[in-house]
Length: 336
Image (cartoon, rainbow, N blue to C red):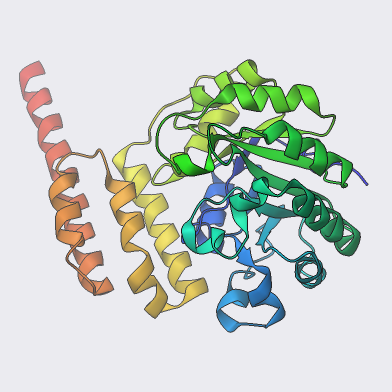
């Protein structure tokens, strides 16, 4: 079985992010150079119960390739059954979530708490590998806490259990997303196993990706929160790896164009009702850092109707265009 990570055209992957990495967001990331996208984490229990809400997370399209489907669960048999179900979607790989620190996941015995039970973790990985007949990857943290850093141990277990690659987030579970990711643990895992290692944590700019690759020796990087409102980060990483200049953050017209396409895809694939509720956070992320955007975000934060939000966003971008036109006119007047 060829290793899907080694065969990728590129080294920048989109992390599975709950409430974010649905089909429309993945399509945006792909258009801007992402090499491999992952679904939101999907409950194995929900899948085998055929929960309509859970099955919705499997929604994809012909353009959504290559795709990694991430599962979470604590029962090897349930995880194996779920793996068989999602294998029918023909993903490039199945990823096992052993890194989520969120309480509602951890309290089920899933996610990062599995790092406290290496024996069970190995049984789950082996069961999914046997059942899926597809490449299987495992996403972990550096450990449960600073006093129990065991990423190397879990990575070796994953390799011995048949995993095709390991994804390492350089924070402990009890850190959540606070503090700074320890990239040294990523390097330690890379030196300890033969399978590809993907580094994750604190990739906020394209230059961060190159630093992580150089510092840790990892085979690829996974971008999570750094892609929120900035899916262009994948293009920047691709440009730097090719020896080209990173053109930096996009202009506001480029942001508006990508944002509008994303919004249209959200309505097309998820329905108007869902888009009304879900897309506001993306509007806040896309406009962050633009002139006068703080006031826009404050206004949008109080809105619930998508037509009103769309009108407000269009008014805002018209004001940016008018301001730019005025600056150019003043410049021409001075030059004359």
